[in-house]
Length: 196
Image 1 (cartoon, rainbow, N blue to C red):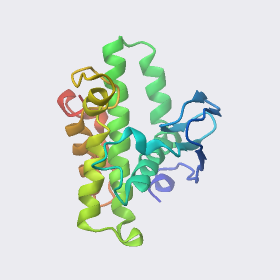
Image 2 (cartoon, rainbow, N blue to C red; image 1 turned 180 degrees about the horizontal axis):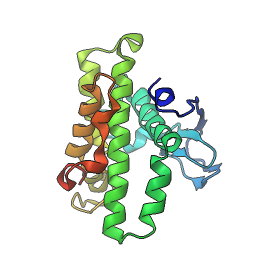
Image 3 (tube, rainbow, N blue to C red; image 1 turned 180 degrees about the vertical axis):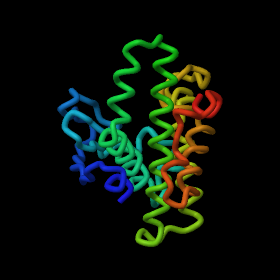
Image 4 (tube, rainbow, N blue to C red; image 1 turned 90 degrees about the horizontal axis):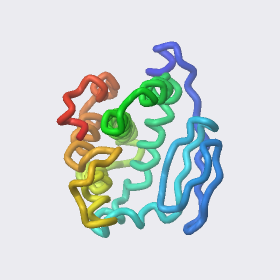
């Protein structure tokens, strides 16, 4: 409804689940497994069956983990439909590497906020609990650049393109607490410290 009120056409993107260990070909190119993403070229969501392999064992069994991952990628679909992604792609061509990384982190943390808002709106239908809320926040923290980099190469201080754990959690929590107002998700006007 928010998209339609703003004059955009809402749609339901197709979700493609691809097998563990395989590469998927999309309108955006190819991608390996252990990944989930939105492709703006074909306006579809993709999720690998082995996506949980990138999560720590502390959170990979969370009841809401797949709903959260899909909600985050759907957040990118909303960004695509509303012109945010297109604007990001235009802007980043003129930016330095560090500026482009920050712009991408703003984009990703906004999708985290949109995911939190989506999970909040689905709360009753999914019969979510306070434990699920804590799991949602824990999963969002677990995919922070610092934690993923520490597991991958032992360097939690490597600058990433999705946002550090505490900031991904911050934006997901803002979405959960938004009461459905996506205006709470404006990461592009947030201080840089909130999107590191």
